[in-house]
Amino acid sequence: MRYFYIFLFTCLISISCSSNKSEPADLVFLNGTIYTVDESNPQVEAVAVKNGIILAVGSSEEIGEYISDQTEVVDLLGMTMTPGLIESHAHLMGIGYNKLELDLMYVKTYDELVEKVAEAVAKAEPGDWITGRGWHQDKWIEKPEKMVKGFQTNDQLNEVSPDNPVFLRHASGHATFANSKALELAGISNLKGERPGEVEGGEIILDELGNPTGVLTERASGIVGKLVPQETPERAAQALTLALKELAEKGITSFHDAGSGQETIDLLLKFKNEGKLTSRHYMMLAGSDPELLENWYKRGPMIDSVDHLFSVRSIKLFCDGALGSRGAWLLEEYTDRPGHFGHETLPMEVVGQVSEKAIPAGFQVNSHAIGDRANREVLDEYEAAFEKYPDAKDLRFRIEHAQHIDPEDIPRFGEMGVIAAMQAIHLSSDRPWAIDRLGEKRIVDGAYVWQKLMQSGAVVANGTDAPVEPVDPIPSFFASVSRQTLEGTPDGGYEASQKMTREEALKSYTLDGAYAEFEEDFKGSIEVGKAADFTVFDKNIMEIPESEILNSKVMMTIVGGKIVYEKPE
Image (cartoon, rainbow, N blue to C red; front, top):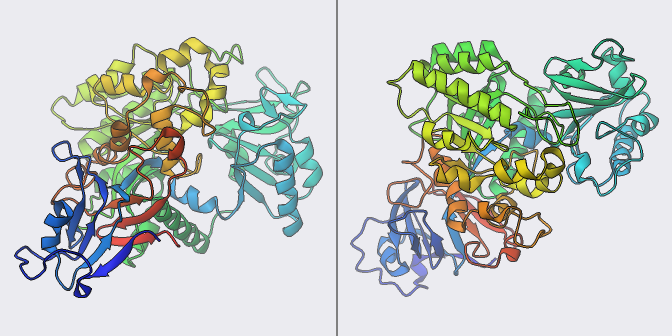
């Protein structure tokens, strides 16, 4: 390991200790390349910490004055430290559960997916459900011979699992793939009629004979999904433990959970009370549960102003689907599916109703909107709610993803103070095939337009949408500054004018993330009086060539002055 601890009684560093006149620190980091995200003092060498709060920043010599014989000292040996990284949009329990079922994120062909299911069936009891997540047909290196509306069919799945129901979620979370056994249990068979396969807010994909192919998009997935056995408390605790471990290993010190219910809230509170939380958490209430929202309107936000470990003060609404499943709600039809505009997965009047209740109750509203029509409609509903409460200030409503926006609506983010919670990694993963969905003009004018949004005055918070993508922030940082795939294509990046600078990318993962949860005065930059949340990298991600960023590793994660992860030697 390139860094090491020094206890001052060994006097191994050339700093005078006898003349110590400053308040002694609990923990000191020396000899680092430290990016503070503080415009007034952007780069330092050392940081002193006491009681989980930053006591001083400066040169190694200056910070040496805060060392006593009780101080733990970490020599960074020139490694790079940043404020603790903030994941601004992901799904905590999904990250954990993804490790307990079939992980299909890295599957490269349909045959490989079928092979993984066959292996799971061989280990299962008759009738057991086979579940998994992560497949994405547009990322496969070769497509099956038979495709219907851009998706595979379940013929091969049925062959390897005739008796075990199979239910596999798309990487985006906006489509699912089921075998015939699962469809049979859900009562889905040959569908005929005036509008076959249509479900309010979704679709059952059918072949030319009206037979279901196994693919269900958006709300149609619930027809089968409701039959999958419920998770047990024991399994939920296991999933949360695995998720927290993953966050620590990836340098994530704070996490915005994009929509959960009371059971997850109770579990997080339990972990907090037991001292098991190794990261800070900002919860969005699942807007799909009206009873949950009503209970919290009456209760009001739960803001942890003491430990800053777990707060609940926002609501997540799911307003359309994703581009991958052709569920994103568009103003004009899909280029690769004429006549199809995606899905309004939540009536827009509900966005208005929730917003009007949330404002007086003290809640932020965060709406999933990927397509340009969904973004416009959500902005319209927000605007109407803001006009109803003209005296309400600093609301910081958000649009989650804001992936494809009509040029007319881009300035509205800045004008209205709406935060764009975007995931740069989606550009790397989706842009190669997204042009087939939208066509070149719509891509260039309004897709992944980070610079246009920032220039409008909008705050752009970064993340990964895990488990849609791995929660690792390094690929998303790379995508932010390169606008390339993880293979480094194309040269110069897609729509290069929209690249973030490295300073902007780091800010989007730190201070802007803190702003998006009303915590910018407590964390997000390395300043005296703020939380001692830090991420340490083995390489200088702010200066090395772009091509080397993906080779960087998180070496250490610190939350509230406690080292929660160290990379093994």
